[in-house]
Image (cartoon, rainbow, N blue to C red):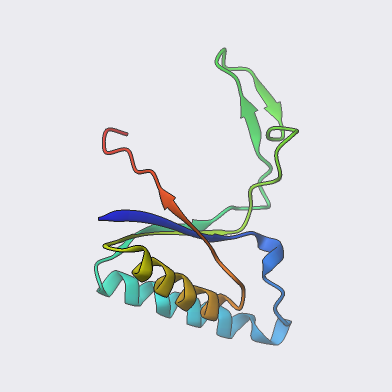
Length: 113
């Protein structure tokens, strides 16, 4: 089976304040369904209140991430599924719950990592 990364950047979630509670409830319900189906691997979101640091091979630390790269933020879910079609179906369920489109990618899992 293949692992799929389903994600969205924070800016994609344009939700009225009155809907945030429903979004949280709906998103957690989809994740609970994925867990019950045995396809959930892990998920979460980037804590945007904690700025990234760039750590070099010598252990030195610089504030910020790669200056040339777009910021990494938003939410992520990894599911293990038998087909891309099923991954698209789960991504659609998450998109509906989160009220925003989801990016779908194959997650290159390294079993030795």
